[in-house]
Length: 132
Image (cartoon, rainbow, N blue to C red):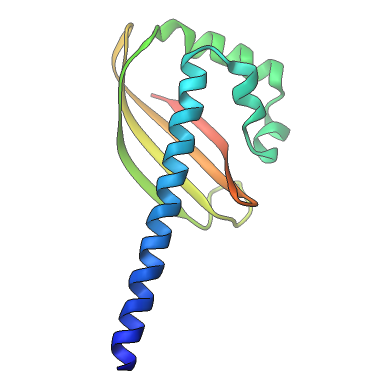
């Protein structure tokens, strides 16, 4: 009986973790849609405090103007991978999810977008965004 209860507890915990990761992916997709729409200032407002300490809002907008805008409109974006972490280089221990997308833009057929989010209280906040 103890083995069955233990197995059930593991299953419930696994489902809860997957649901939490799904919530992180949903937030990331919504955040990227804001970036796609050119809402750079708003996207900065949705980042973590650590991100905001590293990159001022005006610098963030300037970077996106230089890097993201030339790619043109997003044509297609698919989740490639999702991974959960308790530690990341250069960041304090926490609850992180890294989401990688295979994305195509009007002016770049194949790109990889990587978004890292940090759980702050009960919400996911963007910690990093990279396009390759």
